[in-house]
Each structure stands twice: as structure tokens, then as C-alpha cells.
Length: 112
Image 1 (cartoon, rainbow, N blue to C red):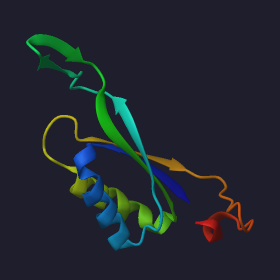
Image 2: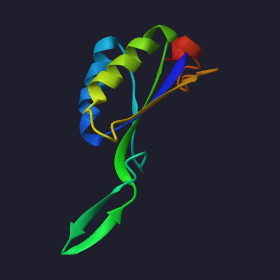
Image 3: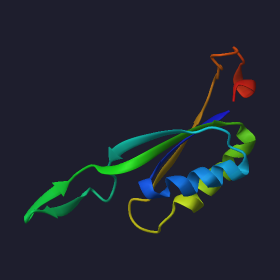
């Protein structure tokens, strides 16, 4: 079992969600986050004053899945989240040691 964590641009959320649903990913956790990578923020003008926005709004998607879905899931996230510009995001993959469904007590693959 694996956990994919993807940091993407906010306007790409629906595209990524639909792409993951098409390949059989059954559940997602989505969190609004702020951060920066190589783009290091940007400057904006507000009422004639220039100010620096250090942390840019992003979306963090987390999805637990069986190992068989992993490669396809990474591929569809990458394809559906890509704009070709700096700040498209990152995908992290971690191994899950144990998963428990709270309501029923099911374990591991049955709990997904």
C-alpha cells in the first residue's frame, strides 16, 4: 500500500480529481496549503504599493492506494496537473505500513 501526496496549483484540482477517479482511486483528502519552491513567491501591486507574496496558495492531495495503482496514479496526476510553468508542484510517494478503517476495524487493503 502506498500514500501519494501531491502539491498542485489550486485551479488544477478538478482535473486531477477526475483523472484519479477514472483510474479507480476511491478516496482523496484535499487541504488548502501555502508554500513556495523554486519560484520563491512573487511581487504584487495593491493600491499603488508593491509587496512580496512569499507563500503561494497550493492544494495538497493525499490518496492511499494499492501498489498496483501507484504507477498509473502518479502518471495521471503528473499529466493532469502540468501547466508547463514554474510552480506546477511535486508528487511524493510513501509506503504505508498499516491502514485501519475506524468504523469496521478492517485492515490494510480491505480498509482502502
